[in-house]
Length: 373
Image (cartoon, rainbow, N blue to C red):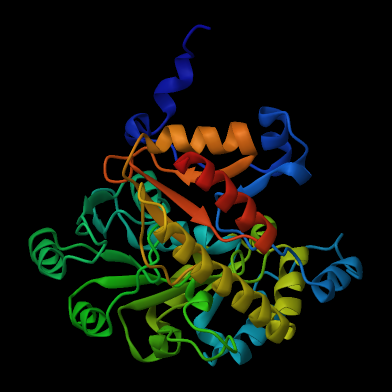
């Protein structure tokens, strides 16, 4: 195929933009693996294995106005979120997943060439969206235990004068938490901190309102943004709905730049129903946490794997013998078990295992023991 004369119209910085590698859905995986969707154990995307609760399904089945554009301000959802989080409604904005809000923040704050800090290994969308918006990405590597290098971050802030620092707690892919004293020290820096709490619901058993979260402090801190999602704990990954708490000075610009109908009526309805069903979802979260703890114990018996302690709904493992990529392929082709593999220098000898139902984890354990034989 000949090169189009219009290719020169594409923004120059996109030529070297590495694509984000997404996870694929059941129908695509089914065709690729020649297995029925029901026979696939999907442990590669940190999704809630229990799916929609009955009350969420009922709410979706009773949608009244799906043919009408949604509320551009997501007022009913934001009202429910305010009660759920304890954050006043005016500080909250909903998005088509937290991913949309990450991009929105960068579109509003970043001019081409502005510096953005990230601390890999971490969620790849921070780097992807920073580059997509022509930001100058500076990455401060975590240590071998996935801890933040606070000294290096402070030096980078002084040297590069970034506008944004992306942090995640629990961090993806290892599930570690940011230490409170470290976070307080970072808040003193002249940089806007975007704290992603996508997995915060898995950090503590019990009611979802009783969490070690920073979201309630946002109205009082000018350089803090906190993001959350319904994709993980609430099982709404396919509906794409997230939200964030933002400082007051930033809100007018975000509202102007946001797509007007970004949260569709099904996603909004499901999210409100999830909040109303939060006690049952907390029970499902507790089941996932129990399976996580059991998996960690089982992995400890395998000499060829090293599992990291996790406060999320996944466990990162270093493959000490053999190739991690080969293990991922073997689990998929032999057993229909999908785990996450990251083809990056720091993680190319690791796999990440999402927590599934008890029967899923038993199948995984049996397969991993087969490797040990």
